[in-house]
Length: 179
Image (cartoon, rainbow, N blue to C red):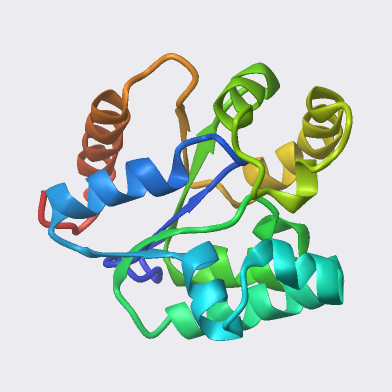
């Protein structure tokens, strides 16, 4: 792990796990920049994510996502990724080689409850959202585990508690962030 960039942290996990919210808080306490890959995709593509999915499909979205991930490597930052970024071998390699990867775990039920009123997520724009979340989780869970240097359970902890857990684990690892 000594080869990894000690100033960059990637947050991975399913939708509703708290990547953006926890990432912003972690960036504040570490005085690091914060990047949200979904926001960067919108800026890069000049279209919303649902529009990209609708007009070009998921495969084009995933190509854009990989390009944006590569672009983000210019920055030493806390980087919140999209839930599906770990689906491509190339992305998993980029994540593992270019910073610390923290997997924010959220159960399917937690994801369901947290995304209930969010209609801007094309992957779960289906009749049975809970079943779709379960299906996605089964595929992605082993991939999150594969890339993770650390795992934080976000099901029952507040944002503040999650950030404190991350800070404590980073200190244990002698991770060189100004905490």
